[in-house]
Amino acid sequence: MSTNVYDVIIVGGGFAGLAAAYHLAGRGAKTLLLEAKGLASGASGACAGRAQVSESPRGLHLSMALAGLKRLESLEEELEFEFEWRRLGNLILIYDEDKLLWWREQVALLQQEGLEATMLEADELGEVEPHLQAEGCLAAAWALEGHLNPFKFARAYARAAQERGADIRAYSSVTGFESNAGRIAAVRVGDERFATGAVLVAAGAWTGRVLSMAGAWLPVQFTHAEAMISERLPQTLHNHVGLADFYETIHAHSRAVSVGAAQQKSGALLITEAVEQSETIHRRNSTWGMAGMARDFLGLFPDLANIRIVRGWAIASPFLPDEQPAIGLMPGFENLFVATCFLLTITTIPLLSEWIAALILGDPVPPGLHLYSPARYVRESG
Image: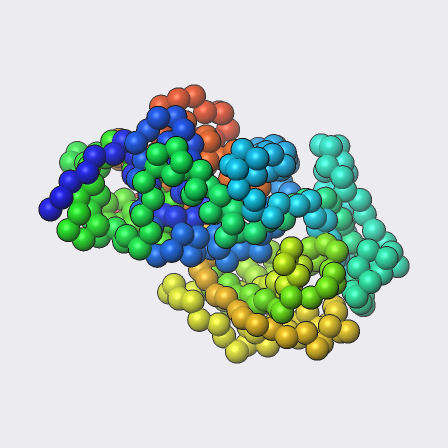
């Protein structure tokens, strides 16, 4: 069995792992990233590419999202790689009086924090989105966020990390860990052995499984999410369009559709999202999901009935019971770290990945990061 020695080994080749590799290598750490499949082959590559800010709760998340949005403005230049970054409006359609009150307060907060945002009356929506027919809509919230190509975003971090000396290995599935007295000594990939000073598990929906191989536990759950992508079209949508009750809808039912849509820089429409509660990770599209998304999309955009759908995707989307991220040192271990279940992922990754690298290397991090410590979860007795 061959042995290589690294300061830090990262398990997971999505946004979090790749961005952490970039910052760790930049701080001089000899870094290895291991990804079981292709880079960004999980939820990172399957996301809509939206740099979310609108739904940010007051406090740490909102401050991170706003700071991350600012970082994204110059990140292509920093990474020396174009990932199709652009500012894009987010239009949230509101059909419920309680939601209307919440969004009026949220828009006021976003404005107070310096983000361009406003409330729109129902009769103004046709000016903002000419193809939209939102019958029964009370009003809409609009905020200027951002959008990018998720595959190119991942590639930008991967390339920049490699230029800083990081070793990135796709199709390298971790098969085990060697540990002693709460310290991970090595990571195994088949017959190869990689000795390490620290391990970061950032494997999305697979994080719980990977941690269990090291004797650690974190209650990572996941839903099965689906979306579909159209042929390339001329300018059709001008914003990301979604529904105010998205989170309530997908969390309240074992199967649910909450339609959203945005036009990619290429011209294709990405139509989301069908969500099913799931105990297994798979990549299969369902007939009910595709049909439900098509039905609800055409309910909002009936004159787009003749567009062609060219492919669909399906992936596991991870979350924790309290719907907050897990970032930090795993309880009972000296050198096993985790970073998973992010909220507002694209917007916060430029900031959080830098903090994660600092945390692993023992450098100071903002005090608010402790709120996401995995130590808040303790295995139930028995």
